[in-house]
Length: 207
Image 1 (tube, rainbow, N blue to C red):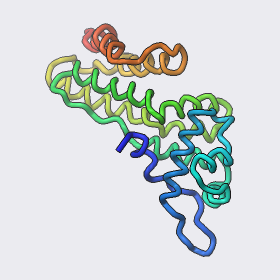
Image 2 (cartoon, helix red, strand yellow; image 1 turned 90 degrees about the vertical axis):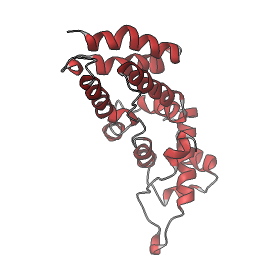
Image 3 (spheres, rainbow, N blue to C red; image 1 turned 30 degrees about the horizontal axis):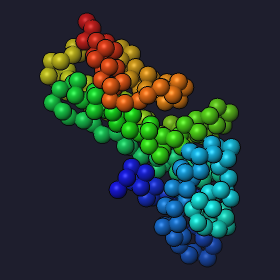
Image 4 (tube, rainbow, N blue to C red; image 1 turned 45 degrees about the vertical axis):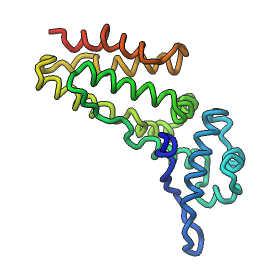
């Protein structure tokens, strides 16, 4: 199962069908996949109910029975995309953990959800509802994952207590996010390794 399949397998519509008949969950999954596809291809401005219905292979009425607006539809998908996807690595050493963790971020940015989210970010500036929804995105659990990795490193004596109080936890995602959103420069293993060795580890080990 791909990451995209995993994310769209369960989407919760905000409405139920009149008369108490249950909605078809398989259509919800198809609609969620279509939202990511259309958003990644056309941007938020091009995310219309017609385009989603066409990509999902369903009638527009099927979508409106579930969601009253494209913002409502998008936020239901954001709830799924925002489910935790970052795993706490345990390679036996801090460097390996950091390389693995930041590689997960690169994989996320380069996948179907990453392309869709890049389009979404341009629409949230003037939309408080979407801003709130974006706080549930995949990197929202970054702090918890980072703290778990760092706590083990402190126990192993690799970094001093309090090392995470620097900007180190934010540097990795910030640099990767800049390349992903702004510069378009490559995101690959070499970038992750250089970032860990030359920036993140020195910051953490600084006393």
